[in-house]
Image 1 (spheres, helix red, strand yellow):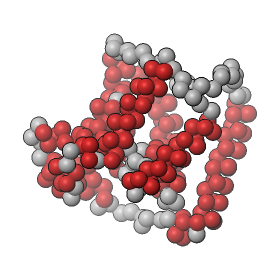
Image 2 (cartoon, one colour):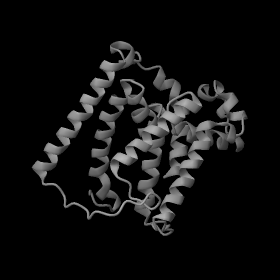
Image 3 (cartoon, one colour):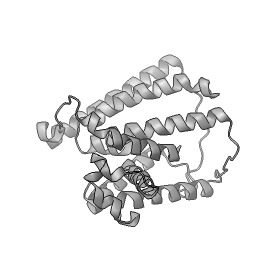
Length: 240
């Protein structure tokens, strides 16, 4: 999935001039339009409404059986949801303080793919997107903050899986599973580049910074998740 995510990201940069030329709304900052406290209050109210709606839907459908409680282990997990949320908030704040911008991920993958394309002779430097970012193509990856953070995330995921005893690589995958990973990766990478981020850069950091586009991203992400769940049986997977 990651390999095709990288590929989809690079393809997205090739098509970026076309999409940017389409009619669009101006950037809307709730903080700038309403002020910090009203914007924060509105965001919290919207989140509260989502929680209430979720509870109503779960009660009507019948909530699934609760998983047995497990002792919280800092290294092996699982972490409580609240602890995970606090950790994500602290990481986003640390990124903003150290890098000077909200947390983002997908730019690094687009850069990796563009560097690979450039190395094998594909003229990505002539694409408008990369012509304006030639410095990033010339600089080593360890000079790019997002790339370094992405490597850390990948290594951290391996470490967490190993500590939890859940690191079990599967080398033999059915063809439909490989096809679903390829299609999903391409769509994720392409869409993330057009949206200027994924669930971290566009949604999490977008809403945290007061940008209205984070909420727009969430609406269409829910629609995409519903469609993806509906299509899972085509690839030999359950809808659950």
